[in-house]
Image (cartoon, rainbow, N blue to C red; front, top):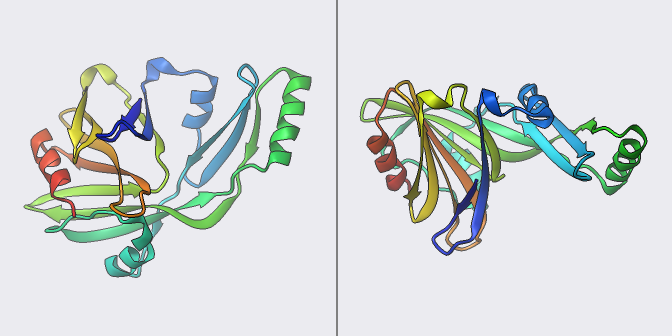
Length: 216
């Protein structure tokens, strides 16, 4: 699913999976533990897919230091919320062309997919803020990477809705227990696309949408 800006530019790609939609690649991705990344050479398509599960690392330096660190991203944050907890995510090195070539040769010999570990690095790729506002607790995730997968265990018990948030396409995924709003937008001057996720439990859809609109 592509998430676009009001100008029609593709800002992010979102994959929503349920238990009924598993293939070999999905199964491998589902098994990734936090802090793991895999490069997969897909034999049938003769292409590389790099999949990661970022590990949440506690950030102890406070919200102002984090804002300073990601200032060039030009992210938006809650204006009236208290920040209760901060975690950050670090990335992985991409496969080199030499590694990709070796995987292609191995796949040609075996006729199957080839999987290799990705090496973690110290590049900040995302953050998670647990916040409280108006007696509501919520989580805001911001990622500088704009491809993600959401697993919906029981798709039929929830709802998926396409809507507009902050002049960009968005996806709302929710049921009675958990509500999630995902969209992407670019900073006003540098044009870096960021993916935003607002997550709450036992809240209503309209409150989450209003919260997204108030970020600044």
